Length: 573
Image (cartoon, rainbow, N blue to C red):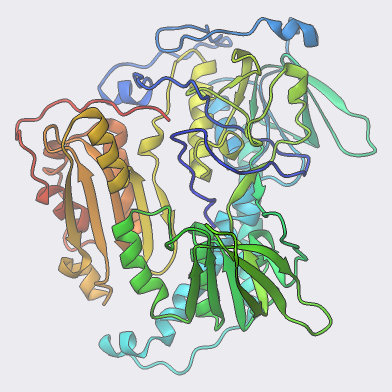
């Protein structure tokens, strides 16, 4: 399942750090610059030649052309800095972010080690993105087979569809095992040392790792990356027993399919599980603290998605309420959920259901990292970093040679964002400054149909426009006008683009429809490369394909100046 999508514009959040010990977290510096030039990928896209790779180890020079910053000198208080190193790079955490950083580091000639206290692949591979897609593949097939109207339109006749719960669960587990093995083998094949144990920072460029009851090993590294991910966030008052009150970690095992399940939270995780459970026969009740469902999505897309994904299905919902207490089923009694009004805090209702899934987001896994040894204080559990993922200590100074990526820093809690951040860090430590543009990173919700997005929502874009004094326009296209979608009998869908009519800059794109998660990348790459609408509308798309939904979207935009003009580079998050 996708992690909860968090794009931090301001350091305001209420997440509390969980207690487990082998993964860390981080959040954007409150004093992050608001105007930056983007180095690395954008320079290459414009035709500039990247730095040649040396056979010797590259040394990052702080305060370079794109990367000024005050570096803390107080680290000597916590131990001496090694003069020689066991590794060029040590990564704490072997999830998708750590894996991406490790592969890129070896490509750049760095001697690399990765420390993992659990299993390779982290949350995404073992308890998130990967097994959830296996379950969603099943739910998608079930929906097709259960839809008489859809099948008849295609001239098909199919007997009543059924499923084997254990077989579905095995499919998800087997996929996770296969991908985990692939990740492990890919690192071993190129010489990455995989060190087993819980990683703890002892001081500057020094890490220990080991298991309980076994003597710790101490290693040194020129640079260290924290990539320890996150765990499900469970609000106070909710008792998780792993059987009838569960998190996404438990739900992915599919040990049961309850007749009636309440899902607390209607973001990515909640929506995807509602798709799975309803396809397998469950009734679902959403419990959402805000006044509308799907609060993180563009409002227009969310409204359409609710009409298609929620209203026709066996789903009801309570909005504007908190689940203050959830008691697991016991001794023949059901799960009891006590609701209060989110604003007045007055008791609102009591629900009795067969099971409850807590889908209230994720919290950074930062305990036991040894951050106190380098004078770093977490903020709501997240490790504070700047726009280059460099860790910031309690005094606001940069900690030399220490970086934090992924869910642990809280900038954008998505697996592919973590990988991109890791690659960006490796670029920096090998002598090439690079700032990742988080507004170009896409996100997707793998419901049926899918939802995807990149950049700003329409309200966010209009707020930005009002502050900075420019106009915003919106273009839309429907899947009902797409030949391939109609051939699939899947014409329900919408693509929406928010842009600047004065320059042709794409501010955001949102898609709801068949294969939306695959279609979004043309838009995200355009934003990443600074491609204007005037340029991309001349791109040719194969016919008939779903990609023509985007083709029509770009062509329908009205830009004031038809002559290609440079697009201002977006601001780092």
